[in-house]
Length: 337
Image 1 (cartoon, one colour):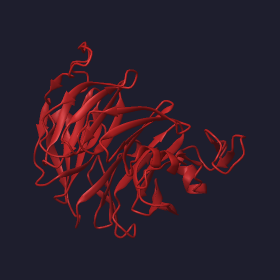
Image 2 (tube, rainbow, N blue to C red):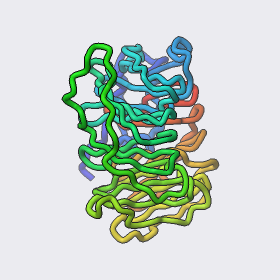
Image 3 (tube, rainbow, N blue to C red):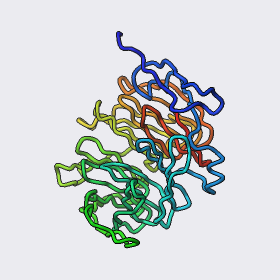
């Protein structure tokens, strides 16, 4: 049509490129469309030298906040880098691997294998609250609706939290952050909750029990639907709200897509990857699925595979920000695409 192609600009030079900004004319107007057309990795933002200096490895969680990249790893720390890969600050309070990071409402939230959820001020680098309630690893965080944080845990529960609780509490120098409990605990899964996605007043949860449960805010967060059909744990969920689609992947290597209005199963794709799909990133009317060594870009209207890409090592986390896709990798590096 008459729509001009999107232009993706490298934030900084590629590692082996010139000092000039590198521009690529891309098809369409979203990161996913661009990636489907080119598959270009612009640069490694946090490289092997930083990994060696930090003494850490796998980037289990990732959040891009303005001109900062927050990285959570196995060593219980959250490291904050600038977009040039320079370490700005290290946040320490967790006692287990940092498995999820979420920035929303001016706060950074983190969850860990230590069963705790923490709220941070990135301006001061201080922990401003502890959310206590889970009894086992908390591996996933999502904003269920404005002001409400949802967490999924290996204790089989989902907990809902008021993100602004105790936000005005003045901490004494060196004082412990306030502790608060959840607004509500959602029970029904028979095993660990592995993934969450918010979709227009609904919260979808995937579990080691091979099911997806759908919880409705307008029904007091009761479970209103159970989606089945997987032959393995449900590892990832993505919501394409503009099209009313819920995309779910499983350890059985399948991908299933439901219509969130009728709950009709729209797509059931067996063996969509050569190994289990452990991560889904949604961008506009596209979804990107990752396994341990490759990624696939899917168009959702109609549903079709647009491109498959081989990755350099396993992707553990991903974030779409600044018109780039950032991936956190098992070797500790972070790449911008």
